[in-house]
Length: 194
Length: 194
DNA sequence: GTCTATATCCGGATAGAC
DNA sequence: GTCTATCCGGATATAGAC
Image (cartoon, rainbow over all chains, first blue to last red):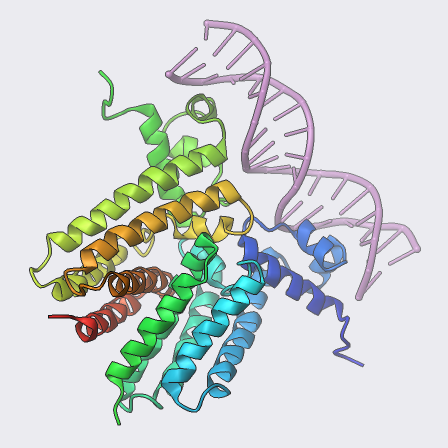
């Protein structure tokens, strides 16, 4: 009964997530979200108190889903974790190009827009980034056993990915993502403890 | 005669640059830019054909200035270029915290906002990023002689910086910038050709 | 739960007085 | 070169019919 595929609330959240990711938070109007999700503004207000609350929901649930996807990509990749890292960046480059350089990180644009202007939303992005870092750091212990070193490596992975997303989208070129992947495998190899 | 300090056109451009950097492009209204630069909307339209043109000017000239500043920071730092790299990231962390996590990259937020929606502005950000990469790659040849390797290192530096800016702003914590700096000095050391 | 109508406000942009 | 007045569209949000 619940959770049918065409669930209105979910259609709204998914459309909002797509638009926020591609155009940012303030450039996206509720009108556009309603059109994209084939509903009306009234329905959006039926499920969410307002635009900020909708965005917070999108950031938290969409962020969790994206983190899970990336981690699954790493865990289902090559057995050698350093190779898996390079493969994941190559996959990210492919996916980005396939979406015509539109769909990169689901929360990065929002994070930059709200960092100095909307504290509840800023906190939502911070919580998502922190959860990603923790999950990544745990995975990184396959490469380095020391927890602090693993956390540094996780930070390097995430910052490189986020920065490369910016450059690849702006240049419409997968090269920055691929270069970041190469540098990261070099770094991981240098840090490796066997 | 020309170029007096209080030049209206420059006041407008500087105010726009500050606001775009902190809040993004679409969240910033011409009204706000006029207030911040102590002018009127009419004056903005006297100097710029419209908001897009103003933003393109801000991206190109502000981007060039920022790139020059970062390069000067690297060249006036410690003699050892690898040490200079770490020092530059530490400096970036200090500056960001001093601005209450507001003033990071002057074009990153705009770049993400316009990448899929405004091609002239997207090109402006791409041109700035490309110029930064070229200048950085040239500097990197103090560490690695091979041009391709130097370009990869330059890409790693810029993507790490941009990604760390996102995380540090969202978390209101210099730690990501400092961790990125550590990882980058490790990478540069591993790539070093002496 | 869905949709329409509307209130209120602010966006970018233009014309023209001074 | 500066400033005011104004146009028009779209923004978020609310009230209420069905």
